[in-house]
Image (cartoon, rainbow, N blue to C red):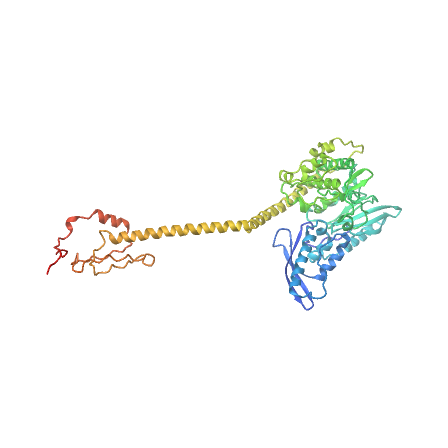
Length: 572
């Protein structure tokens, strides 16, 4: 059923779960206000960044919109007098940077539309509520039995998914929920397979899967209708929230933090694991488990949003498990997400950090045992346990399931093969993203280590030692050259000079070797030792030539001379 128009050619399918980071690079004063130049980056690639300019009034407007979360956010206070002084602007810039750090690292705030539009206005300029209304109106033209009661504004966390409260005209008291969603970056099914798979969801029957009344899809988006539950989801139970309230109001800052009873944890956990095992055996990819995707029907948990993986939507916890390369299959993703859900059921709030280093006291040691097998650093390194392994653990193995409804979900062989290929493509994109994050983390760690004070001290010590070694080696070389110079000047092959004749200057190494000291003077009446002055040899002649001259020396070749001895005393 073509109830929606096709997407424009070359449409960019953005992953909204990729974290945005923001760094204030500079500030500039214009007339009576100050503008802050902010560098925003999506993910770990510096190439995927851009600049935005914001005033303090823009921050203040955003902060007012986020007050629905009831969180105390660290926005610097207003100042009317002296707000153009240089010291004040520098101090305010630090405060605004701290504010940006908080809203970009808070898991729920960082994914909300308000923050995304503030940091990336070009990618989030579309009004998805208006688009959803247009598509729903087109749907009602071909299906007149449905009627919209009211829009359920912002009850979910996804920017590109909108909800409406519905009713059937001939059954006005029965309430249903219509969800409309745009296609996501992990949509790998062909349009034909997608439409067939989405329609097939309404035929799925399982005691722990929430019933779908109607579902359809086309080339750009999908529409699903389910019964509305006044009791709400498992997350509503944990946070004691009203199902119709906005997501930020319900879950950002709960008034009372309290986990569930041990029996509820055991029963709900076992039911969720059973339905995950069923989907894994059917070869149906899920990957979207979290407490807001689990509907409560009495004492029974029922899974929601099976269509998400078909539409290619990213997971709520993707920014967590994309950090760990061992969580690289959708089965592993489901187990990791189950760890988050179990923690939330146990302690009434999500974990502060992943991996979890230590766990607060729990209703049972068996609960902590399961959490340790999923959320600790060791678990992240070794990989996730299987669903079958979790079902065998003491926390869930003794839970009796009373529901006798027989599961039914027939998937044709051809579609099953298409789902398998789609699952592999989803896992491949996840693996590539994890690889990039891992490389970036290694580079950042190396740069941080290289720039640390301890490393700087080590490099200074090494440089000092190297300098001393070079100076020592240079001194040894200087000493050797000086020794060779002296030997060359006193050997047999060197010319004998008269007392009045100066020593010939060296032709090599003269700039670095100092001249040899003059010989002691002889008595003034002494005749010259020789009248022949051979050609002077350079001081830098090789040592081999000197040794050869010494070895070939013959005493007989010396001329006889007569000397007059004037050393005797004279008496006049």
